[in-house]
Length: 136
Image (cartoon, rainbow, N blue to C red):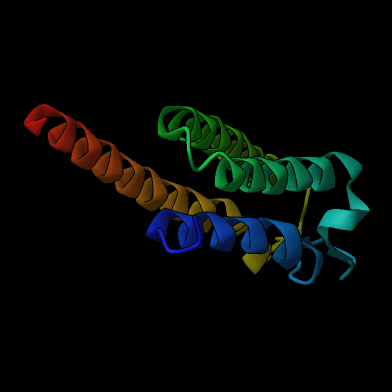
């Protein structure tokens, strides 16, 4: 379980989405107020759900196909979160001053990259097991 590279990737996803959004600002409003994940209840729930899915995927190390599917669901959830951030950053109508985007908006991008790497490693493991089964 721990010795597999996809476990490391999934652990990174869990740490990135479970810790960083609460320390890195997502955006800065016009008044200079920084918005973190804990300021928005739905955003914090989504980040927690991403973390839980990553941990569940780590625990499912014996069922590689299910692990692959859970990672795909996690990627879809990250894409929805990324879409919300893009929508939020582009639909600020009526502002005379442009609000700043925080570094926290990139968290779903990094999560998606590590989830893709984890799925590649899972696929590689599955192919290896299938090739060994053919030799029997």
